[in-house]
Image (tube, rainbow, N blue to C red):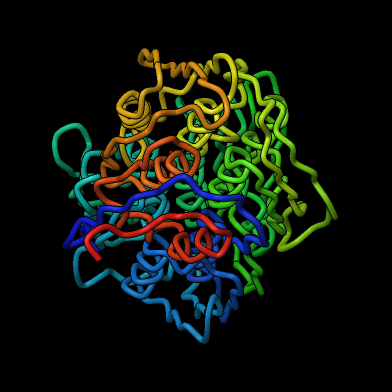
Length: 450
Ligand code: S3P
C-alpha cells in the first residue's frame, strides 16, 4: 500500500468528439464512511456501489485490522460485520493508509476514544500531509498522538481509556476533521459538538443519522453547529453508494473542451456541499443540462447531458464556494485554460495540503503547456487561451496525486500537441476505471512504453 512500485507515464492526444454514456463509479467519501460506520454498527451492513479504488480498499483492510469482518461479494457489493461503538480491537500491525488522507483521518477519529494503541503510516504523499489538524481535537477527548515533526506520519495514537466529550470549532474548512471529531464523539459519553464556519460535505452527518445516531445540525451566529449524542447503538444498514461527482468532473470537463462532444453522465450528485464545480461551469457558459432530478442512495442526483462549449468565459469563482468544489479546482483550471478570458480562484490555500500542493502542481504543468498563470499562497489565476488553443507538448509532474494526473490528461485531449504525465499510477486510488471509461467515450489516452 505504501506507494506504487513503478511510475506509469501516460499521454493524452487531441481527440475527436467524445460521445456516449459515462458510468461513474461510487463516491469515495461515502464509500469510506459506509465501511467505517458499518464496522461500528452491531451486525451486518450491506453496501452496493462501493468504490473499489485503492483508497477505499485501504479503509476496508484497516476495518479488518480493528476487528470487523469485511467481505467482498461481487463488483461493488460488500458486507461489513461490525463490532459496535467502542468494540474495536487493537490492530496487530501498523495501519498503512497508502495515499488516502480520508482513511487515516477518519480512522484516527474512530479509534481515538477506545483504549488501544494504533500506529498509522502512508505513502510519500500522505507522509507529508498535516495530521495535527485531527490529533489536536482528538486530544480534547483524552487521546494522545506521537508523530514526526510537524505532526506527520508515521504516527501513533493512544486512544482515551476514559474519554470525555468535546466541543470543537474546526479552524479550516475540512470534512475530514469534522468527521474525525464526530467519529471520536461516538464513544464519548454525553454531547460532542463540532462547529464549522463554512459548511463542508455532510456525508458523515447524513450517514450517522441513517445508522441511528442522534445528531442535530443548525445554523447559528457561530457557524454551522453539529451536535452528536455519544454512545449510540448503531444499527446496520443497506447502503447504496451514489456515483462520485468528483470523478464525474473529469469526463464532464473533457466533453466541454473537446470539439463536437456530447456525453451523458447519469446520477451525478447535486448535494449542495459537493456541486460547486457544476455551478461554476454553468456560470462560465458550459452547456450542461441537468435531467431527471431524483434521489439515489440518500443523495439528490441528476443525469448530466454535457456538450462541447466553445463560448465559455473566465469568471471569478466565489471563495465561499471553495469547500463545495475543493477537489475540482485542478480540472477547473484546465477548463479555464480553454475558456476565453481570465478565471480567478481565490480562497483556495487548502489545495496546498492535498495529495500534492495542487496550486503549484497545476501552475507548473499549465505553464509548461504554454498557459499563463498567476498564483499566491491562497490564489490561482488562469489566463484562458480560448477553445483548443492551449499549445501542450509537455510532460507534467503528477506528484503522486490522482487528480493532478487526470487533469493534465484531460488537458491533452484538447491541446494542440500531446500532454503527458510522468506517473498515472495514482489514478487507481480514486478512479480505477478512468482509462477504460475515457477510451469508451473516444478519448485518446495511452500508457507510454507499452
Ligand atoms: C474528504 C474531504 C476533503 C476532500 C477529500 C475527501 C472527505 O478533504 O478533499 O478528497 O471524504 O471527507 P478535507 O477535509 O481535507 O477538505
